[in-house]
Image (cartoon, rainbow, N blue to C red; front, side, top):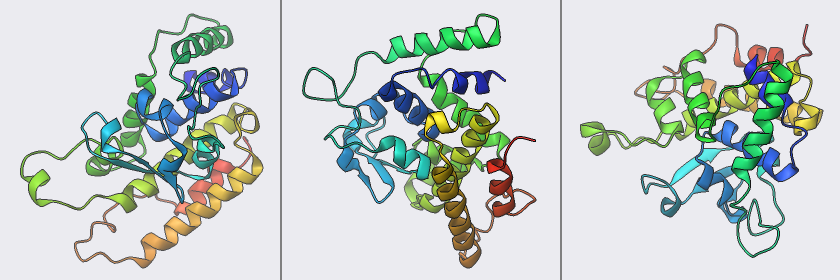
Length: 239
């Protein structure tokens, strides 16, 4: 319920802040990684955060779904350009958070607990377990490095798995936005929903076609229903 309230509070926010806060949730990236993103970092739907801008100095690739790609689109050098100076928009994000929290409290009818932008990253990580994402993939989505011998010998980077589960997470958020009646206002338009469903079908086909020798792809936890049925149900009108 509170999750839906946060989405209902979003449409009244200035476009840049609305886009940024949604991207924090969809990508599980850190605030500085989102606000200082350059348009050139997004190539063919893949957002690569360079090593120089990540906490662990390791480049991080995030496969953006159709909604995420729309939110990241900018005709400027910066995804979020500053209004009065050259460079990224680094100011105003916490004030935007305060406005969203105030509207959430108004919608809920009680004071919503204080939160920081990093809590959106924690929300994404916490939901990986609910969505049955395996631990290795969930950690890779957060750009958490492997430890011990795994870091030395296991060089597989889980890019396919990350792409599948980022798309699942985007669908999950879009489904909640639809239930809250604000999907269109958050640019989760019918066209975007159709693109997400098509991407879901393509991802399902890719995973079905692959037969990794070590069984890694095949061992991905999947819903009891097919991906297509799950995604279609998420995109259907609230019953």
